[in-house]
Image (cartoon, rainbow, N blue to C red; front, side, top):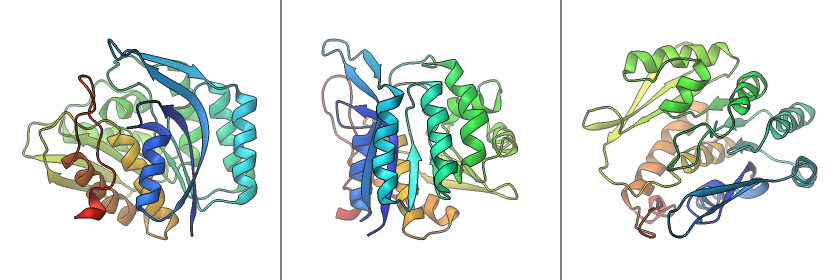
Length: 264
């Protein structure tokens, strides 16, 4: 069985973060291991997010445990500090990890401000050059590319080119349902050609964890031997089914259903 690592935060509600990653890994028949960078709790009455970063020394001990076993692919999610970003980059280099999915998480669902702007700079400088692929949404892509908010497909392409110029081998920008079209659009770019990935737009708010799930599915597919473009295409099918079957958890959030694709 192939082995995967997620270096990410814990979502206490179970829909995103390492919880989403492990559920996705399981659905792809890979063995998932976790290095927890932060713990996210929610206030029951408002669902406001409370983020507690894990000490970098503890994160390193987790990584040393996992990397002593060996992995076939890894992903990053929420990274609690510049020091943890530096640690992740150091471990990737030291262990020669060549299948790396960077999901550049910058905000919690429901929040609109970058958690730590200095983290974005560190991701841009330290992690993107090590990325087999990075998976930003429109907001994250604009931040990485240092552009104004992205509103068109041409602007997605411009951002993709700038992100590749920072060192990532491939990028997929998640446009999702942001554009006023009947399709949910993502843009894949390998530095040479653009591929627009389209799926039926799903009018639902039950999409908590979709980004984590997408990146974890790509990671799983890479571990299982798929090319990057095939890994992305399969992951889009997987997360589309998960969103389509999302459900209400409480008055504030509805997660995707990670097992939906395999139950079709």
